[in-house]
Length: 187
Image (cartoon, rainbow, N blue to C red):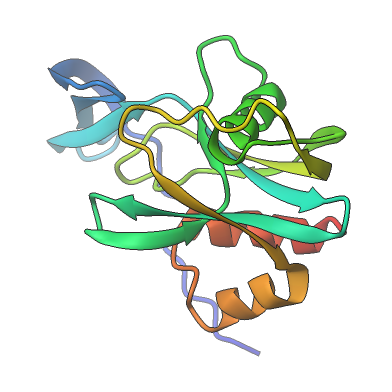
């Protein structure tokens, strides 16, 4: 049995101010000033104000999973991922995921449902990521509709191989790994 070490439940700090520092195309850099409720210490904390995201575990009619690989500017590398993107204001997360699936891969799903959600990095992000399961996906005639800077390799891969990629760290995108975990938990 592990030893339990705890300082008790930490208090929620009091928000004093929230300031926009730099608006960007897909998110805003903001600063919040907080005060500790017991000792009065104050500090400035920076965060990214972003819309929610959706990632899609998409299974084809043949039972294979759809993966995409694209260049990511933050890591300066190609990245294997689940299809996904931004949930537009007022948009249902499942609808957003199915829209992103079609735009990025050209596949449409017979059905879709929410299977989980997470906070991508609550230390610096204020958004959530919704995990969508899309089943019985088929390639649509409409094809892809990539954003200006998107360019992707699209692969349909047996589920066991995708899970092996995750074990072998060939998939390093944290939200893709979370999506695969929720998929495994909801089978």
